[in-house]
Image (cartoon, rainbow, N blue to C red; front, side, top):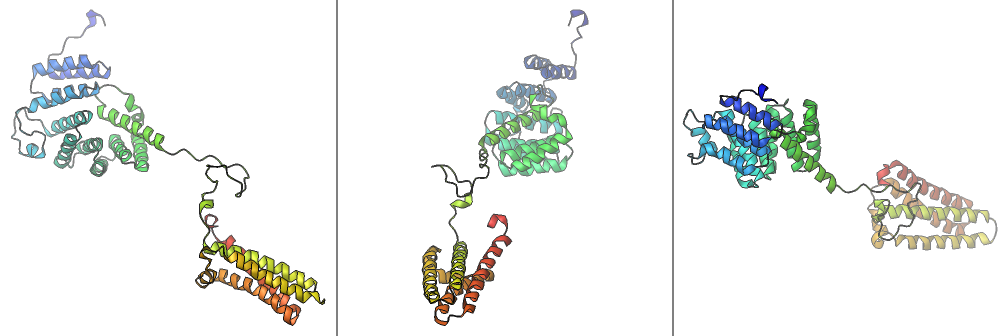
Length: 391
């Protein structure tokens, strides 16, 4: 800009602060601090000038100077940041009003967080929340400070309070999302951030802003982005897709995870019992049909004895696979009447075949076939009636 069009320097505090804000929005923080210095020289007791100076230092990543600028006005007060001091302070021309005091506390808390003085920041935020319970800015700012000082549940309560006081304020929802992400409540964080974007679509680019006008919003958005990246990095990788049309019994390579996690679970006694019924009933049906084809010959009774004994041996071998080998106890404790009926029908089939060797009536073979069919039908019907995730 040429010297002919250079504006006259401001002559009051507000003019210097306006120039400082414009310079800070351009990222020229040192020049902005110089303008504020002129404002402080004009009015050493200006709280607004000290708040602006502290915010400029915070934006420039100089938390020590920001803290010094805030503490300068309270050098003569024993404990100026406590709730008691705010309630009992005598009125004076230089005493900050409630909005200014909230702004002072917020900027001081942010500086303490940047300096990693988390205990001091937590005490300040607790006093801020207790002193101004109906101030939306105080509540959401106190929540953000508590979240930064690793105080989870109080921060979450304060963030919800800030949203209740200002439901249409995008920054309140942004703080709630930040606190939720800190507590790893990612569903809450996602919904809160989505609401903040709905209320202010530009909030998604806030982390790239410069200056002091949106200082807190920029800090919150940047921290939320860091937490989101960290959560994404810590998330387990998605499982690899299963091979197309791969059978469940396909062999697995050593050290690889099975395709179906249910393969790692040992079968329950009821599952082994169903398998026993299907195999035993199938054997009895084939044996009964075979003996029936030999009916009328002298060998049919001998085959009936062999088939019946073979069925008893097969049942004995398979029964040992039931956990604990307690098949009778498992059957006695069954609450599924259909499975119990299938067990009794499967057990009756080889007995009927054995009885044919003594009586030689074809109705015994027919009864054995019917009993085996009923047993298989009851088990298969039960399998199709269960939900897919329980089969």
